[in-house]
Length: 260
Length: 339
Image 1 (cartoon, helix red, strand yellow):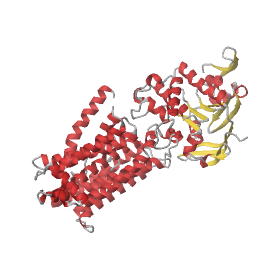
Image 2 (cartoon, chains in turn green, orange):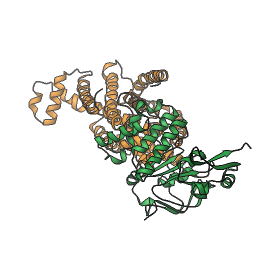
Image 3 (tube, helix red, strand yellow):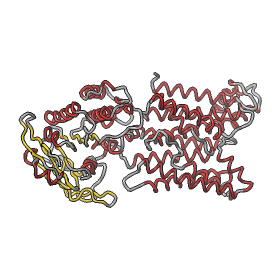
Image 4 (cartoon, chains in turn brown, cyan):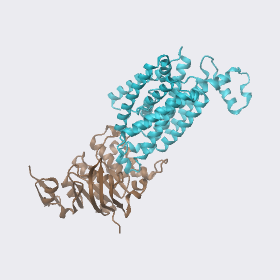
């Protein structure tokens, strides 16, 4: 059985500055991964490499046993979906039109959406609680509403791999949990893989199966939550003092911080 | 709301009517049905259609008016679609075919040709140098704004503004040293469809037609690009090639339009703006509708200056004088309603 992603000594330089250095990581299908690290440690760059938006300057990335850059773009778009960090859309597309864009990889260039595409659209928008503004312009939505539409757009893509790049940064706690639940459910029931860059370590510990700590462009630690999440790793990666313990209420390992 | 298909059919019909009506308008008034009969006669080659029509009319319609009318319509179409595409790629609803300095480059090339009386290509020398100026400006702007990782829209707009400013100063200098030729330069810069021939019609038709084909092919990718480069990339768009192909094609289309007609502002900015409020921003509807709306609009403007006003006013002046305030109006309205 091939690994889903196999990143081998990959490096990436941006404007002569090294962002990733000899980065190696192996990821398997059917797992919820959380990527955690301080600002500027190369998390977004890693995502860019994994969707094939950027090419590593050295090393290689294999996806399902084949070099990532040998996949045609169109085929890759049916394999890997991305929810990017928050951004602005300058044109007044309706929310529904934006979610339908997630179906484009499944629809021929000049064809109209099929009944199946419309059914998926309705389903996803109902699940993500976005039907209420289906016909409103994306330009008029609040940051959180827009982020849910973008999340719905990625789910509509119906790809086996879902990359979340701080996809919940603008959501209230209710919608954050809803969105992460939907992602976790797809991992549990449909063998999908979620790779989420997250800032909130407690949410990551609650939802993820495995955590990857990144520091200065390389992996500081990688493994199941209960083996890697501890006081030492938080001290060395984030320079914070904390207490890490199993919390019986959430049934997960949780972190408590101390003022500096 | 009409479906996209019926909108197109209606606009096409409207364009045909406007063409026939304006072919009858002018110093010599020719009845509507005579215009139709003349066209039918020329197309079928059957002289029976022309029975009872003044011998002069077919010459006026076919050799004088239609080339000008069709060139105006095609240039309007070309400026409007390339405006829509520029707005899409640069993620900026205020971009137009001239944002990247294409017009300044064309104007500089044309001014040079006029000033030094360059005539190695006969009457084609000015358009040819205008085209060369436009295209070299475009590539310089792209070179200036590329950072190896693809094109950023802010960089492109900024480079376009800088290069256009330098070229404008160059044009001012050329005008200053031009002496008696200065009026020729100024007149060219203000745009005109006077004395266009069938060669102009065919040239612009082929270029705008090919460009339109490229735009339609990439129109869905253009939708995705408005979600940002990373997302577009994850949805299967080649974010290095697709924007570049669109950018170069749109610039070539507008460069051809400018070199044939001079600088005609506001069509490329205004038409996609108005059309977007009807069709929405989906480029698969926006681009074809802009094509026809641009054709109708510029043809009407040219007919007004040619046949309605007592004296012909340069077309570029008309579009700016009417389009500018109109743009202020819709811009202000949008600020208030947020739509």
